[in-house]
Length: 433
Ligand SMILES: Cc1ncc(COP(=O)(O)O)c(C=O)c1O
Image 1 (cartoon, protein in one colour):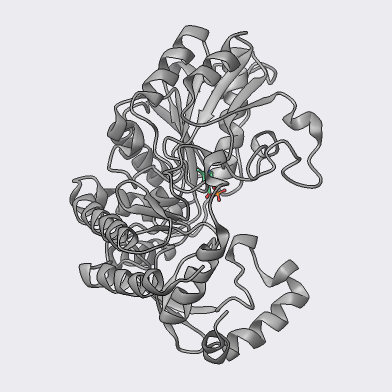
Image 2: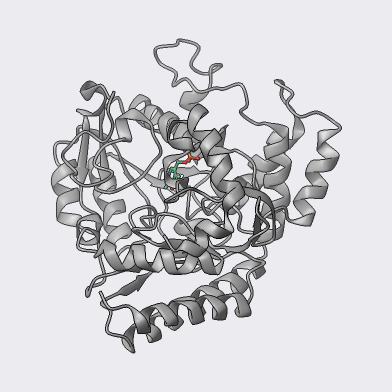
């Protein structure tokens, strides 16, 4: 890391020393770690982060992609402020959970019913269980490099080596019924679903943590067909793409409806949330009045499900997003960023390609555009890390230094993008390898 970073972040350095004594690795989530120490954010507004040393960064991580309206948008702050005085957590039914559900059913093409969770991980967990309950099958198929949160049965083949255990402490029995196939490979999907023993196939319509990889034309349609032929539920994990790719999510964008959709991030308006939604026929399996027998019903619940603060923040956010104007702006910024980076790369001696759709962009340091997580392994990490060391002291905030993948939000401007491009150009024209 550049010396200037250490010089600029001395208060963060001291905080990190304290953090290391009480938080493993000094952080709340490993991917937020920065070498030699993270900068500690003191406040955030729009797309500007201010750290405890007074440094200002333009944020391209925007809360793990959740903050499509940026940090603390006025409308959400106001609505949440009013709600705080009326109750932070009821633990009983209330109107806001109905209102948000009505909006979700209206906006998400395949949704007729839904249940909330407090995170995307939990939504994946409950959706997997629901798929098993509905189909009476125990097998699941996921994509190599797919990230669905830390739920045991899907915590498999996340990073290379894909055939090794993805975490210590995982009971191999919890992952043995999970089959893994590569992204963008319909033959592999056909093969995996052939025996008709799989409850569901779960896929991110655009692979997120693997580096914003888009589906080949016809891939999602092909998965839909194979699932229909074999009675397998198709699950789209739209925790990233949900309300980022447009008001009707990736399923509206690509015109392919899954049986179950997993949501999180953007729909919470900056507060913890998750949800899973789908057809009434599948979701009635969660209904204890229709299925009073525990062994026939798929259990779902949780202390903070339907939390009124998350609900009001989600409602306010979706009401801003539903007419599509925000997407016109951020998608145009996304194109400006991707095209700008491509121009810079083509004028340089560095092998790199850009992926991403809409308001997302990722930089892969290799010659070919990756189509799946195995292709991403060919990325050269050295220029990626060098780019990170170049960008952070210049005030550009993003995570996963080895695999830069970033998001734009409504408060970003063309000037922000151009500043990012200027700093990138400096890097690409000087990098010697
Ligand atoms: C596609 C996808 N699914 C699930 C999750 C897990 O969501 P959470 O971190 O809210 O548990 C993530 C988080 O980044 C994600 O990107």
